[in-house]
Image 1 (cartoon, one colour):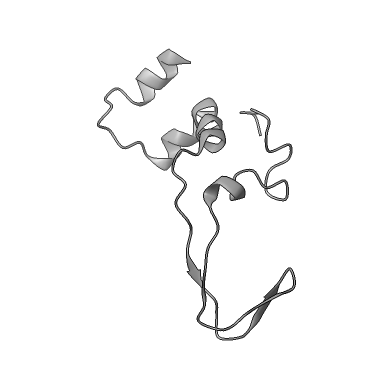
Image 2 (cartoon, rainbow, N blue to C red):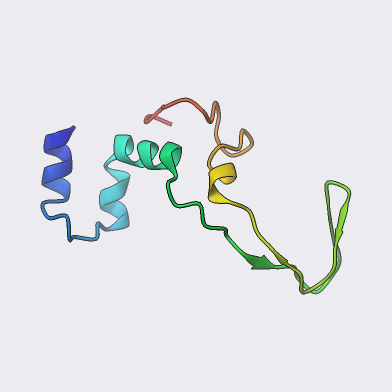
Length: 87
């Protein structure tokens, strides 16, 4: 694993390409589970009223969700709390 990382990312200052990250499933899965950045993913509600889980969201309302919850959502990831690089 260490050799694969060094070959793909020889310098810590490099920004890897998306295609390179796809070749590092253990790193990708580790980042998914650790999610140390807990910023929100803001969006603006579209031009019509939205309804979500009994809540009414008027048009133009900013809505967001923490990536922590997105990356652990069982609707997005089968067995989301397991370390499973092959997914």
